[in-house]
Structure formats: structure tokens, C-alpha cells
Length: 252
Ligand code: ADP
Ligand code: MG
Image 1 (spheres, rainbow, N blue to C red):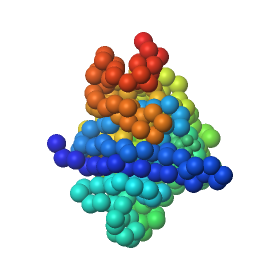
Image 2: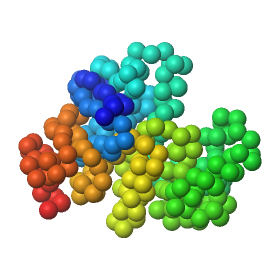
Image 3: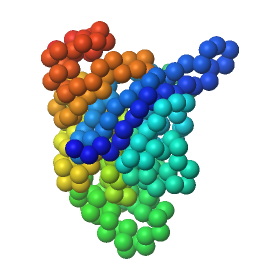
Image 4: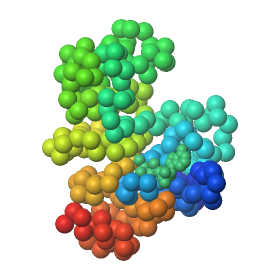
């Protein structure tokens, strides 16, 4: 299996005024294989979103390296790295925040294409294709974010993320604000897209039960460090770290 992202000894310190700097991410190493869904699990403040921001180039690492397709993005010039960052798209917790409330969802989904200079006919075609791919009716393109359900809006956010045909999707708590039944529909959609588009997915979540349903491997984070990693079954049936045991107890 090909490695798409390899993270080695990644560390991120944030400046803390008046006290010692704190490590939000501390010496973290993991690999994302092509075509798999890798879960990053951990309580709030454990460093999950910081890892996502490091992977997408929004912030710079203090130490360590991130290889995407064998290229170390931490050492690359910004304009060269941008091409690689284009292969990675994100989906966030609150789908409505991904869209301008004053613009239709179709406009929002097509925005990344407009930025790349596509003409309006090409954008309309692609938006229609993306809506269908994400299980949404064509007329959703003409609705505003507040006119659709949370689940539909998250599907639209996924459609938008896929507009530029990324190879990697990072979902940061993308199901956390949704009802349980809708969460399940969203992970089914992600799993379908993973297979049909050969996507590799990093699924950030604090719900181990959900992770067990569709992730291939799990990285457990606590206080910026990896406490263990393995398949969902290994983690759930035989947790090693104290924190993982607590996490497993919470779903049994
Ligand atoms: P998670 O996504 O797992 O909830 P985060 O990655 O958001 O965790 O945060 C990890 C730690 O880093 C937390 O202690 C948080 O307060 C701190 N942190 C995150 N972003 C910043 C920032 N821009 N400046 C200072 N501290 C930050
Ligand atoms: Mg977070």
C-alpha cells in the first residue's frame, strides 16, 4: 500500500505569554495509506485540529516533517507546496460556516472552480455532478444554507471540498454537530466516495463508536502525543493506554 502522508516527529509549540510555551502537538508520527480512512481520536485540546492545520499548511511546524507523496512540505518553498496543499481539502464541524449565508449552495460549491477560472457552464455542470455524487437533489444548488438541514449542508460542504478533485480529505469533527442517524449517513457517504474516488481520508472525531464503523486504523491522541495506534478492533478490544481504556469504557 502506498503512503500518501508520512508524519515524522511532528511538534508544534504555541507561544504562551508569561508562561512556558506549550506543545499542542508533541513528537507525533503516523502514516496515511492510499485509499484508507485513518481516524485521529482524542479529547478536546489533544491537538487534533492543530495536526490538521499543519497538514494543510495553515500553520508551520516547530519541528519534525510532513511528507506528502514523498515531498517534505516543511522544507518546500511556499509556492511549490501550494500545489501539494491543493491535493488536500477539509470538511469542518459546522457546515453552514463553510458557506456564505447570502449566496446559494450551488454558488458556494462552485466557488473553488470559479477561483480556478472555469466558465459558468462548466461550473454548473460540475456542481450538478457533485450534488448527485453527494446524494443531494439538483435543486439544492438554488437554496441558501439556512434553507437546508444540517446533514444536507454537510453533504454540500463535502461536495465543495471535492470540487477540485483532491486526493486527501481531512474531516475535522465533520459529524460532531449532527444527529446520530445523520452521522451514520455522512460516514456512509464518505466511505462510498473513498472507494469511488480512491480518496484517502483523515477522520478527526472523539466518538470511538463511529470510528469503529468505518475507519481502517486509529491514532489515539492525548495531550498532543500519540498514546497508541492500531485497527479499531485492536484499540477497542485490547486498549493499552489508560486514556484509551477510558475512551473504550465510554462506548461500552
Ligand atoms: P483539538 O482539536 O484536539 O480539540 P487543538 O489542536 O485545537 O485540539 O488544540 C490543542 C492545544 O493547542 C490546546 O491546548 C489549544 O488551546 C492549543 N492551541 C490551539 N491553537 C492555538 C493557538 N493558535 N494559539 C495558542 N494555543 C493554541
Ligand atoms: Mg479540534
